[in-house]
Length: 169
Image (cartoon, rainbow, N blue to C red):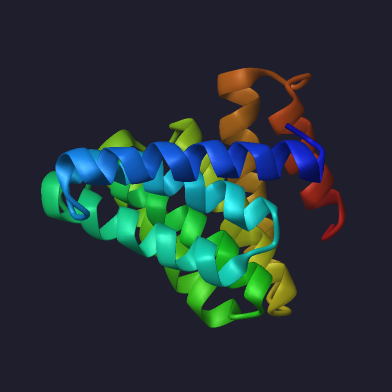
């Protein structure tokens, strides 16, 4: 799904599926959280930041209600919200979101889990944009070490983090 037309078609299908599920379950049923997150992710990719933010906040609220504020699914919602805030230029909000997701994932999943690597990479990016190169470098080095150990040096995600780090060093 790389073209805008493909993404828009996917968005339409996801919106239709979500509407059907909401009619079945009600608008605030916890089973809708993952669908809301996926639709928010697609809206973000399409550049519809206000809709992405609203969808991700709904997903986060439902996951928090059902799974708790300290659950990895909730952390994933927070991380996605952080990416939207980053793209909106709300660097403080993005930093807070990435730090929160990182704290949850590190506590629940452990310091070397790939989700921690994802959170650290995203935090490193926002810290770089805030001008805190030292903290950004530390976050990206941590992320790179996690991905290298978990996925290997030739994995595309590891290479992406290495590129992000090379832009700071």
